[in-house]
Image (tube, rainbow over the protein chains, first blue to last red):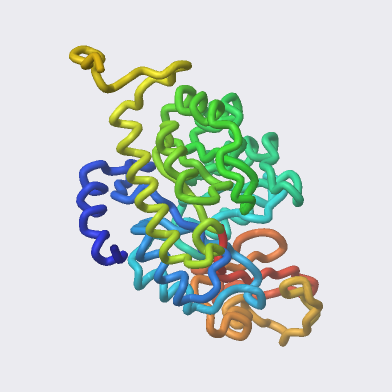
Length: 270
Length: 66
């Protein structure tokens, strides 16, 4: 089945189950990062196949940044832009970057990243909470990339963040969700939207995130660095949809021993 | 006058404005943001903000990112 054949059915499902984030309504529960795509054409195909309505972008010095053509592609796709603070290591840097992004993109929404270690790219919890508090006070809609620690998640929600975005595993690692228990705990801990952000490797990871109770999934490398980004984008869209449906449907309890689904009554003696 | 633009020592004409700097450095880019000595210069202030010798300027534009 091709992207275009499948899209109408998915759009009907998605439209009936809207995703509310900071007072805005989205039909898609898949957020896409734009980094890592092999070409603008591949990026456009992936964005369209994913059905996403919210994509992340970064700010860099003009010499190192994409030309205006990437923005033309994203504008043409009709997606909303979510600037990030990728690369920032202190609250001060992240706040300044968010303020610059607000000026550049004309949006108070920011994906807040404050990295504590350049090898693991794990969040610096102390700087992250500091930056979140400053940005909320400055009127930003803060969407923080965080660890899967439920206590830290609660602190971010209490600080006024519009969502909590825990990693499943390190950025770009493709290791999936290393601690599903923590994601489930986070779901029970915070009432703001929970968005699984980072670590997704393949479609089953995205489905698991939704089955654990996440409201949405944010991923980049899993699609942009896949051998076929457009196909993987469609797979992620279907996985998010399937995981959402499965969560709502209520899975069966896990059992230690088998339980036959075929009745024993009326079994012939042979 | 001597200033620093995106980490590189640069000579600009005296009385240069942020708007003139953006026009020169930002060709081919859209949705640019400028920081002067660490603080955002709002777009509305680009034309009226004159640079001073020793200013540390960052001229930024969107790029792909997670």
